[in-house]
Length: 273
Image 1 (cartoon, rainbow, N blue to C red):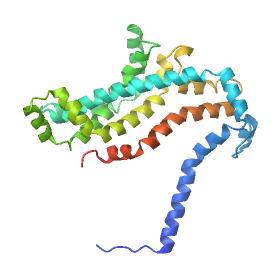
Image 2: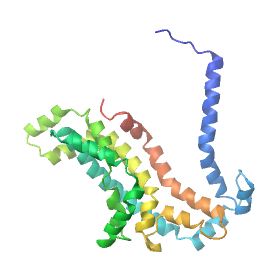
Image 3: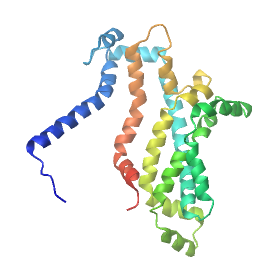
Image 4: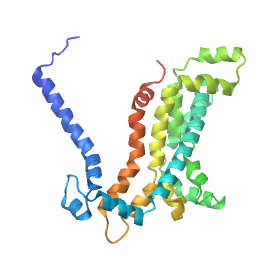
């Protein structure tokens, strides 16, 4: 195959293109942080430089918004939901790949078809069901619909295809239980897959809006997305306060992604070489 030699002009154009794309990608995040330091009138005028209104916005937030309570509600439901979802979906993905059954492919196809069903079509039945069993306005009611997802099961199953089955067979010969194989062999080897799935699940649960809006019916159970949306419900919107709360809401997912970025890439590309 003939290789195309890149000239200095071509390389320069590539870097210019990448810089422009990075600016467009980073600018909304930059504007959000800058807006948190300005007052509403400056934000409406389109000011994109740092202001001197950050302390006032913080004071207003503490006086008018229960940010601590909402942050705690989001954090505990997200952590519990992520742990349960990863545990259940990894077991399912492990089982789909390791155990042999002539009907498992058909079951997986049904699960994948369920991904095509929009949440709006099951929202009312879910609400009626959770209302009947008295799980509205509870942490369990928030978590249960997200514990098992077809995407995560499929994700674990696809990554498990490269898992060495001979290792499982050897462990069975040595007398290790099936759950012991999962906990002591499968989980350590598939650590990058678990990391990638955890990041995706954490971000989806943290930013979840529609289902918490339905199931969390009191101010004490309000999560951060609901709190931020409520800041725009009045006749006038304090955009400085709004951007400050949005910045706080964005911080955990940003920290999680950048600290686990390497494992996330490894998990998406393939955890087992």
